[in-house]
Each structure stands twice: as structure tokens, then as C-alpha cells.
Image 1 (tube, rainbow, N blue to C red):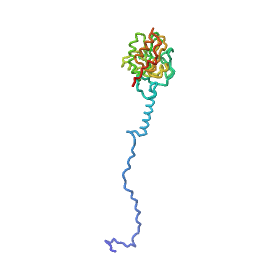
Image 2 (cartoon, rainbow, N blue to C red):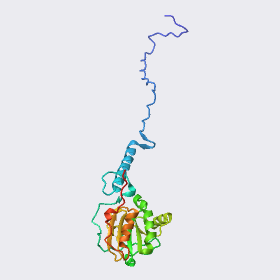
Image 3 (cartoon, rainbow, N blue to C red):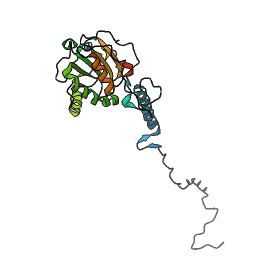
Amino acid sequence: MPCWLGSCRSTSDARVTSSPTPRPVPPPPGPAPAPRRRRGVGPFSLRQVAGALGVVVVAAVVLTIATAPLGSTAPGLPNPAASAYLLGSPIPGLRVGDLAPELAGTSSDGSTFVLADLDGNPIRLADLRGRAVWINFWASWCPPCQAETPILREIDEGYRDRGLSLVAVQVQQTVDDGLAYADRYGLEYAIGADVSAAVFRTYRVFALPTQFFIDPDGVIRAVVNGPLDLAGASALVESILPGEVSPGPSASDLVAPSPTP
């Protein structure tokens, strides 16, 4: 075998070495795995979104139940201005012929609460003996109460000098709420903030608005669970004015009717 440039060596002298075991060559890197996509809305996961929606749905159901009109089993308020807002289960309440209790009660902290007007002056039925009294339980967020406001204002202006005292008991709202509402609508009748609903409980009210018509001797002559129209309110007030007390019209016939669809 020819040798080139003395590079040939005898095979007998040559050190026999084993060929190194080749290292496995790692496979060429493939494309990076796609990041796991987070399914959801914005920064929220679907689980979080579902949880939030569940809270909203439950809240909506509770709100629908709490605001269902009296005598209606259908959800919602097709005519909220002519329907009372049910705030609790109907309970046996004060009756016609009962002596009206004072506008007071026990607060949630156990203290005695006496209703006062927006100027801080106590409102006592004992001080109103000899006058007819219309007590209206309401709240500024209540649609039928809002719709009834012009009627209360007109009745107050028309009958105040004839012996009527109108007392609007604002349930679970503050004096500032009452001041803002009275200023906005030019109301001059007495408004009392029943912040803890103490008077509300004393009168066993379960819906807004609820009306009590009291004669000059302090006796309840009519109870209406719901809003009144002008004619109905006028008839009830006329029946309890000083010197004109009579059995009066049936209160159940004087609740403002829902318009025919």
C-alpha cells in the first residue's frame, strides 16, 4: 500500500483504540408550545365571571320578590305607580276603631325613638288632638310614593286650614334625604325621618305607601295599603275633618286603580 509523506505506519505498531461511542444528538428544537389560553372576560376567568353572574342573578331575584306588588303573583311591576311596594309578609295590623299609637318605637339599638320633623321638632299625636291626621308611610325611592306626592301636596294645601295635619313618615331614610325631597317638590307638610323603621314597626306596616286616617279624637277611621288618587284622598280627608267625622267611604274602594292595558 503506498504511503504518502511518511504517514504510513505499520498496523502492528499502531495503537488500537476503540472508536468513541457517539453521543446521541438531541433532536432539533421544535416550535415552542403555544401558551395555555385563559378563557374569560378581560382579566377575569370564566369561573370568576360565572360567580359574579350568579350573584347578580340572585340579587335580581331577591329584588323582584321584595318589590312584587300586593295581590300580584307575576314578577315585576307592570304599573309601579299604582301598586304598593311589599316590604314584608302581610301581618295583622292596626284596625279601624283602634286608638292610633304615638309616632314612636324602639330602635334597633334598644333605645326609644320619637319621630321628629325635618327641623328636629318632635311630632306627637297628642299635640294634634282636635285635628284630623293623615299619616303616610313612604320612601323617596318608591315609584307609587313619588306618583302620590303631588296629591299629598294638593291635599295639604287645600285642607290645612280646615283642620288637617298631614304627617309623612319617611321609612329608613335620613333627614338629608327628606330635606332634599321636600325642597325639590316644594313640600310644606310635616316629614319625619324614621331612620331605623321604629315607627314603621309600631304601626305594623308591610308595604309602601300605607295610609292611616285618624279623626280628631285620635281614632283610626281608615287604613289603606297602597297609593290613593286625588278623589279617594279627598273623600277620606273629608270624612275625618273636625265636626265632619263620619264612617266615610270604604278604604278598599279608594286605592288608585291600575289603568286597563
